[in-house]
Image (cartoon, rainbow, N blue to C red; front, side, top):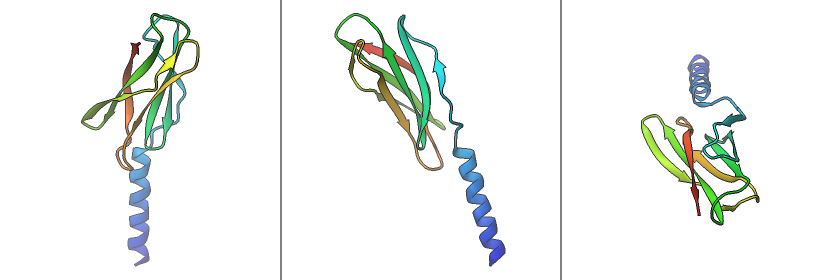
Length: 109
């Protein structure tokens, strides 16, 4: 019984280890002049925060291109006026299938 419990525990830890992405705070390639993007990890996924200094219109929002395995979707970020703060979009998956940000684009309003 102890051996089965140990094998089950090792299997669960192994599967969790496969699903965890390393915590990284890398700078993503800016999609617009004067914008700064930063990708980071959240629980069961990742997110992107984009700050823009100035631009056309009132503000902007980021749209994250999320993926997990063979599934792909968009995650709409928060609307932010220019020179105010970052627009954040999160890609959240499941316990064994964490989501990742595959790319992003900005929408100016």
